[in-house]
Length: 111
Image (cartoon, rainbow, N blue to C red):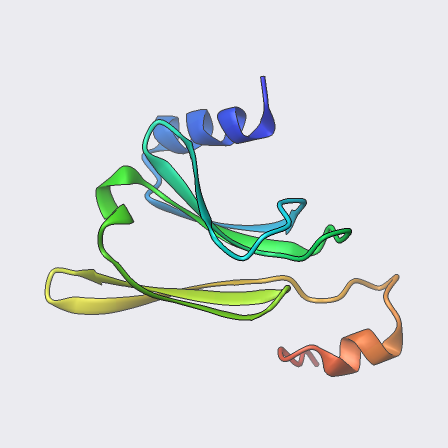
């Protein structure tokens, strides 16, 4: 069973509509169906494992009004529901094994 299938089963079992994922190996800047009505909105580039994404259930797939991909490690989707706009982010900060330059260049400053 693929990881996508395992993820979809876990999200269905726990009734999760939105799930931010990091360290993805999906190398694209688009959306794709991952099964059972779930859509993966992705942000990543080839030959990296630091991509991010947001998994959206079938219930809200048609409610996505915008997608912003800032870089491979940071993205946002905006969802319209119940007369409001909800902003969901997925971010992946550089790890301790990364260079200081990679940490300094990251848009999210920690500490």
